[in-house]
Length: 68
Image (tube, rainbow, N blue to C red; front, side):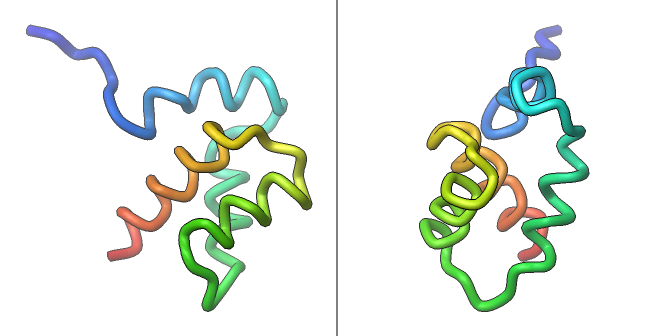
């Protein structure tokens, strides 16, 4: 059995370590943004919160998948 995490969630440990906040914090912030498309949310995280592109993209992809 291979229980290795794949997809956007594979970035979560490094996101928490690098930015000092749990993933739930970032998902809550994303949940408060309305009417923005994927890349708009990515750019918002990068601009307003200083996340790198890959980390922001992973959070947004996960968030959007959960809200469908």
